[in-house]
Image (cartoon, rainbow, N blue to C red; front, top):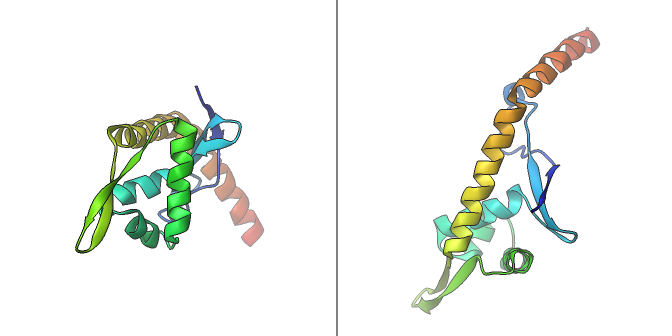
Amino acid sequence: MGKLNIGKPDMRKRTAKSLPSLSFRIDLDPEGRIGPGKIRLLENIETCGSISAAGRAMDMSYKRAWNLVDEINRICGRAVVERQAGGKNGGGAVLTPFGVSLIARYRKIERVAAGAARKELAALKADIGGVRKIFRG
């Protein structure tokens, strides 16, 4: 089983009022990890129906998006995305059942970890808030 590590916070959807917050990644092997960026890419593939559109939604090139998908496949030892044969607009991509399960499991672990840390994060926020007031004077 992987190891839970605290990673960089996802600042995209956080506001000053919601900080501090918990963000994490799961180390699945010494060289491979799954974190919020890779999970967001998979969610975007599911929503957009293509690797290239999912990458664009994250300001990422197709090559970078494909390399990340390939890395996830390698880390997990099985495919998370299947390419679809193209029509007039080219091909697309869909998540495999394992890809869908990977997102669901990651999000559930994320919710459980956030719930477990909520009280301590609130205490940290209170501690930091008092310190900020002193320094702003």
